[in-house]
Image 1 (tube, rainbow, N blue to C red):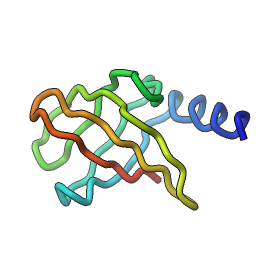
Image 2: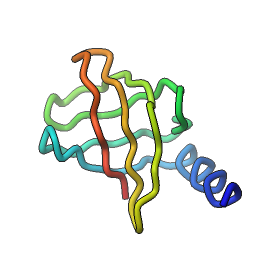
Image 3: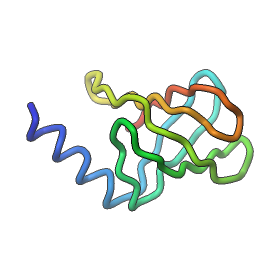
Image 4: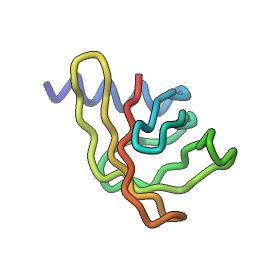
Length: 85
């Protein structure tokens, strides 16, 4: 299991990652080079605002074929749940 999670993190840091924020009803991208793991600060592109946002990763959970990333958005002061493909 640990090897699978490590492989996911390595893969995510090498390419852009597309996802959806169901609470905000919009698409987001995690750009390449971001290491998506709990406690990390990463940059996401928020299509609803048309800008990049700095967020802190709170948790990363795998559910079937998708991965749920909970983040804290520094700009809005809100927690967001991103479902990434």
